[in-house]
Length: 96
Image (cartoon, rainbow, N blue to C red; front, side, top):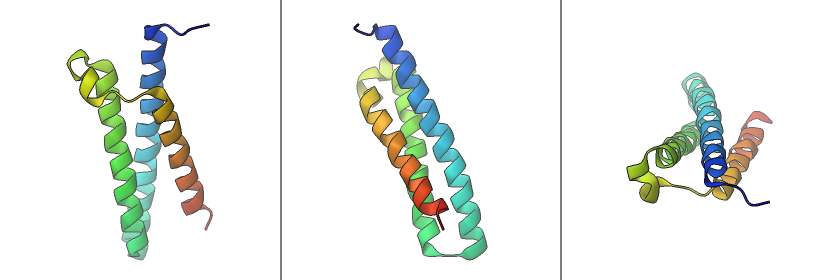
């Protein structure tokens, strides 16, 4: 059954919200680790999580604001892949 445009917008907003929340949590964690240990690895990981946070904010703005739909709109399949990337990054960092 084909999805309606409204359902796709809801899915995009949900996935963008997950990316925003998860990347913000991981950014805070990696910044705390960097401030405690001062390893350059945590600074790079913090920068990556910040970029994911920024991308999530722009994707949500593109989904919700009509004038930005063409500029910042990201397909839900890409958002799903980015969420998986964030989860695997978390597992790689938290494993140690």
